[in-house]
Image (tube, rainbow, N blue to C red):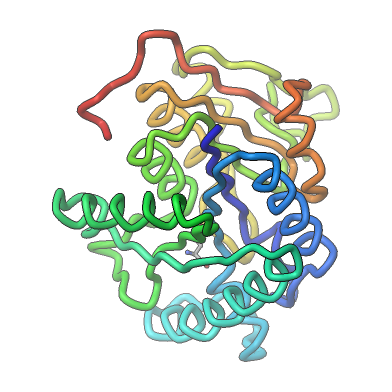
Length: 263
Ligand code: GLU
C-alpha cells in the first residue's frame, strides 16, 4: 500500500516547542518497520515553526510573518536533522520536499513534484513533505498540513492518509467539555452534521483543528482515498490501522469514486 502519514506539531513537540523524543522515536521506528514490510510511506510533517520557537527560545508561536518564517527556517533544519538521524538507525534514507500553494496549484510544478516523489519512492527513500513556510505568505500558502497532506495523497494516488493528531478522532461533541461525547468510528459521507461537529480550535503551536481535517477527508474521499484520524501519542497505533483494527475515525471513500481530474 502507498500510505501518507501526517504528523502534527502537537505530537512532535512538547508545549515548550522542544522535541517530544519519545513520540518521534516511536514514530520513526514504526514507519521504518512498515516500510520494511513493503509499504510505500510518505511523511507529511509539521513542526518547523514549533521547533523553531523552541530552538530560538521564543515565548510562544509568533504572530508576525517574518518571525514565523525565521522560526520555520530554523525549525525545518532541526526537524530534518532529527528525522535523518532517527531513520538512519533503521537504514532508511529521507528526502525533504517543501511545497507552497503555488506549487500544488500549478500543473508543471505538480508534475515536477510527482516525478521527484515517485523517483524517490522507487529509490527506496522516505520523502518528508512540509509547507515551505519560509517562502509562504498568506496569499500563496496552503495554510495547514491537513490540507497539504490531502493534496499530496490525492496527487500521488495514495491508498490511505493517516492524520496523527492529539485527539482520538471525530467525536459526537467536544470531548474536552462534554463527558458524554462519543468517538465516531466510521464516516461514509461528509454531511453538514459531520462538518458542524468539527467546529473548534487547534493546539497552541500548530495550526488546523478538526475542520481542516474534515475538509482533508472530503478531498481524499472524492478521489477514492481513505483517511483515518487517530491519536499520534503512540505511533504503534499505525500497526493496528494496518491490521484493520478499529482505530480513531475512518473516513471511507465510496467505491467508484476515483476522480481522475483531481489528481
Ligand atoms: N508547516 C507548519 C510547520 O511546519 C505546520 C502547519 C500545520 O501544522 O498545519 O510548522
